[in-house]
Image 1: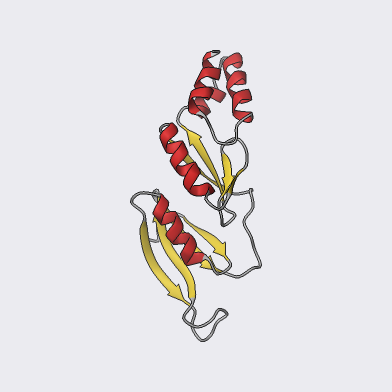
Image 2 (image 1 turned 180 degrees about the horizontal axis):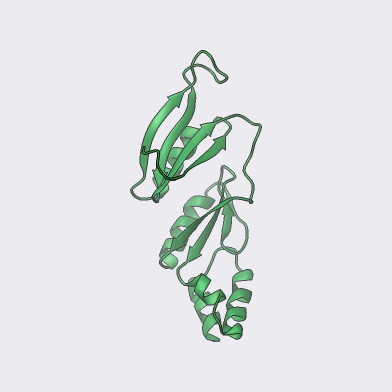
Length: 159
């Protein structure tokens, strides 16, 4: 993988390769890079996976088996902008397998990584200069876990 730009390092406790494979199975066009293994120097067992490079949705990642010291939290999340309800459903369903929906399009996957599954146009609707449209859409958004695109559009239109 190229070293230009940014690469996000995700810290796992023995699940790095499994997580990388999981994410690569969800996003079309995903690529695997190098797989590094622990040596006799440790700290992990010699031959076990230290890190896996992968790319999904144009974003470079390294999944690192760093140990139990750190875990994921909601302070960092990945946003997936979806063209329609079908894409919202696809990403939501795949990423909540073993995880859970949280609120307002946010979810935590089975590894504890936070994601936002956002339909096209939502940011424009909640940021509309017409305060009534923005308020109706925001109220509808706040009542949802997984986004219902048709319901958001109805709220925006005042239906």
